[in-house]
Length: 118
Length: 118
DNA sequence: GAATTTTTTTAGAATTATTCTAAAAAATGT
DNA sequence: ACATTTTTTAGAATAATTCTAAAAAAATTC
Image 1 (cartoon, each protein chain N blue to C red):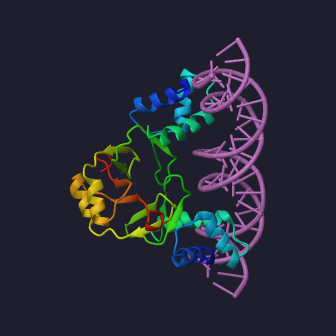
Image 2 (image 1 turned 135 degrees about the vertical axis):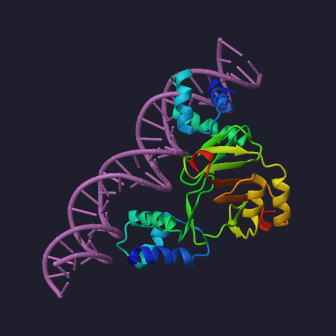
Image 3 (image 1 turned 60 degrees about the vertical axis):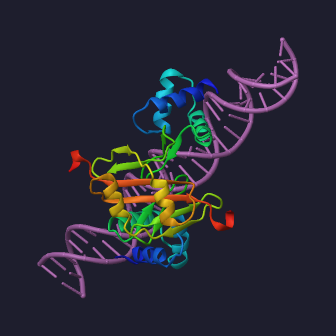
């Protein structure tokens, strides 16, 4: 665990939003000015492999990284594009029953119109 | 409706798989050798806007285009990476009940291990 | 149906996101 | 501390996508 990797993990955990690789790079540079963008990418891959964070990809957006590795629903407002998280207890089991075979995980993005954009 | 757009739409509809922009470009060139890659992109954007096709993005994969605009589940094998479609009747309603507010659409990718890769 | 206007296409440059490479630096094991 | 392994850095390379300006095609108007 290098100081670069620790910093990236901390930034992801402290953030209220999902951050892109470049956003993390910009934030990381403030604390560790010499850090390279490739280091951010390397560590994001590694942290995701180790299960510390989760890579998320939405249609039309740059890949982001989520501190929560517990499955949950991503709510996307079609008006302003804001992304929020929503718990999804029991959805794994529900999905397995529906499909009739065991599953490893799922990614669920729900598009709606948030109260502000109504 | 230009012949380029018609061709791209036909190729998507005739394909059994989801195709990337570049795959479509390669296929389209066989029938219309002078077609430009930008034309493929322009028309994919347009066709998706018009609701003729659907753009799909999976974590780590290049964007693909789906002939079916009816919501369905994408099954992704974690072994071989193969993507297949699965119907999802009633899932929209189920999801709305779970969330407690109306939704526009959803994207659901389920990761599993296919029989071959077991 | 020719002239005009609008839309689309083409070719290539530009941009964005990401990955690769090779040398330097840091961390780890002895 | 010395050797080995891993990680980082800087910058080049690649991949996917978008932009731009001119040419071509399609649609509209007279």
